[in-house]
Amino acid sequence: MVPRSSPACQSLDWKQALGQAHRDTDRLLRALGLRRQDIPDLDPDAAEFGILVPQNFAELMRPGDPNDPLLRQVLPLGAEHMPAPGFTLDPVGDAAAEKAPGLLQKYAGRALLMVTGACAVHCRYCFRRHFPYRDLGPTQPRLDSALASLAADRSIQEVILSGGDPLMLDDNQIAALINRLAQVPHLRRLRIHTRLPIVLPARVTEHLAHVLAESRLATVVVIHANHPRELGFAAEQALSRLAAQGARLLNQSVLLRRVNDDVVTLQALSERLLDCRVLPYYIHQLDPVQGAAHFQVSDKCATMLINQLRARTSGYLVPKLVREISGQQSKTQIA
Ligand SMILES: *Cc1c(COP(=O)(O)O)cnc(C)c1O
Ligand code: SF4
Image (cartoon, rainbow, N blue to C red):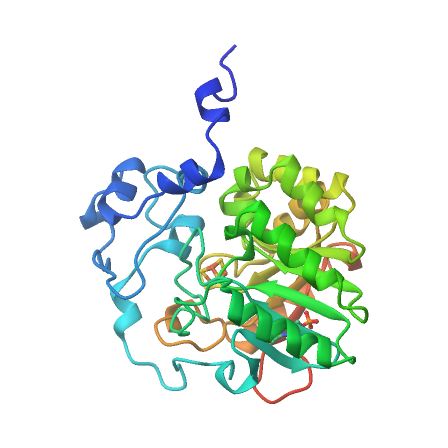
């Protein structure tokens, strides 16, 4: 029997795992048995938004396949520099929705708190890839002003922790933040938007799951997976630690050309999510952020895919196809 992973590997904590992430395109390609010439449109430097891929995520990619759907999500291509009409730096009007520094409110009853600019992975299609949040940190004055703004608005029942990835904070910072939020009497729900259970499953320790479960706020964790192969054994274990502590688990995906734009993949994704105790929530039409046009799928094709999915599987395995349009009162449902 070959052990599933060596003891040394199991004891790697999440900060060590993050430290060993791929930050160099050539090193990632070598790990996958690929050469630069296998990817004609490669942009090896990607200076503005550098490559970042944890090793355990890279291990889920198919070696030797330059078109691997996981690799495509993280590999910088020359196409990112092509100007595309309508693709802008702040496609969803985040800058205009700031109530306090790092606190966005677009929709009734819920506000989004950006607690860090850091992520454990750099997704090339990220709609915040140009947002000036890199210097956002959970600094005391910033949090104080966000908390004061939340406490002053009794219409807000739910706080969404976002970023960047909020689970990049350590357990003590998260516990302290949740504790402060729980002291605001009109808050009832805490939502966490995170990709770390997928790209850095070691982050989801028993202790973290406990910290999230402990507060009086109902906790919803919305993960982000786009392809069934992203949900490996380690991610499944991470998600079951969260579910075991009572967190409700939902997934949002982005519909991405040559990553998940076929019905077989979408069905397998939904089914794999359910195996991992997660319900599909949204599938987003790409936000038109500069540098991501090569991932775009037309509305017509997207609608057709969702209709095909609906004809093949249980209703609760069909995510809502939505787009974010600045100035609307909610995400706009397309199908
Ligand atoms: C998407 C988003 C939300 C959450 O919307 P739901 O439809 O409740 O998932 C909240 N605030 C902002 C700023 C958002 O962009
Ligand atoms: S995990 Fe989310 S916020 Fe981070 S780079 Fe990917 S899409 Fe952007």
